[in-house]
Image 1 (cartoon, rainbow, N blue to C red):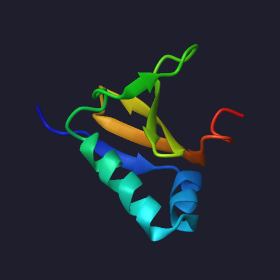
Image 2: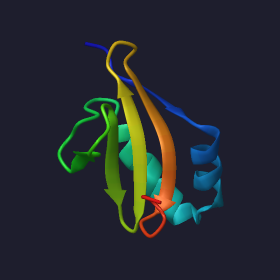
Image 3: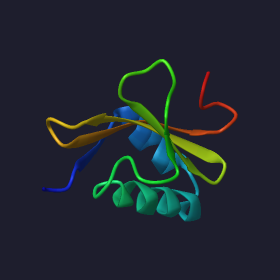
Length: 86
């Protein structure tokens, strides 16, 4: 089975660019690890959603959507934990 492809929304890409390099590098490594298994240990499905998931990376949260038919991971938000669920 082929790996998933990762795409970023415009706001997720901008949020990543605004972060210090050490934090953005860490987030990118964790996102790249999702291509083999987007539902890997340590990620959680968001309640009241059908296909939205959350991954913790230090004080930041990566919110993404999985499309199994198209084999896509759509990274929607990258936010500090204080702002992630507002």
